[in-house]
Structure formats: structure tokens, C-alpha cells
Length: 154
Image (cartoon, rainbow, N blue to C red):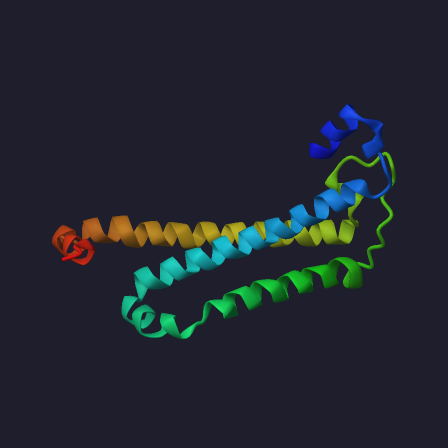
């Protein structure tokens, strides 16, 4: 949409490969977003389902390992685009959407990745909702005292 709006304002933006350079960072940021959301959701699910394990071993995973994993995946994704799919940056001037700006191979890979990640995030979120709300309230155990005690700063 940004590309389309820029074209409406001025024809100077109608240059070869311009849409690719607008979309490429967006695709990469979308991948980073999906990966980070998945890792955060996985972290919360592990903390809710096996809290003793989480308490004992979570501090052993440095945050740099998480960043390194994300960076390695971004490099892998660039390999898929330019290596595996053999994409050469040559976008026609008439192109104004994602499908014609990148190769069909990478487009299918990117859709597949996004769908798998969001399905996994949904499954983890539903399991977290089950653990936090349904399981706690159906147990018949009053946890409000424990929660108050945990959140109390004194």
C-alpha cells in the first residue's frame, strides 16, 4: 500500500526494483515478529506447565542465544530467497504487490512459514489459557491467596 500511495504522489517512485526494497525489510521484520512471538509464548507455556523446571533452568539460557537463533534464521531465510529459490532482483515496473516482487518459490515458503508459526502460537496460547483459567478454576483450590503472596513486595 505504501508503494501504491507513493506512486500516486509522484512518478519518481516508479523505478525498477523499488517495491522489492520496500517489501524485503517488511518480510524480514514479519519473520522476526513471528519468531519472537512464538518464543515468548513458548516461554510462558513452559513457565505455566512446568514451573520448577522453568525456575531451575531458564536462567541458564542466555538472551544472546535467543538473538543468535533469530539472526541465524534470518540468514537462512535469505539463503532460501537467493540461494534455494534462485531469486534475481528484477522486478517489472508494473509490479505493485508481493507476488510479482518476489519469486513464487519464496512466496510459498514465506506463506508456509507464517501459517505454521501462527498455528503453533495459537495452539500454545490455547494451552496456556487452559492452564491458567480452566484448570485453576475447575480444581476447586483457591489460588488468590498464593497469587497475592507472590505479588506482595513486602
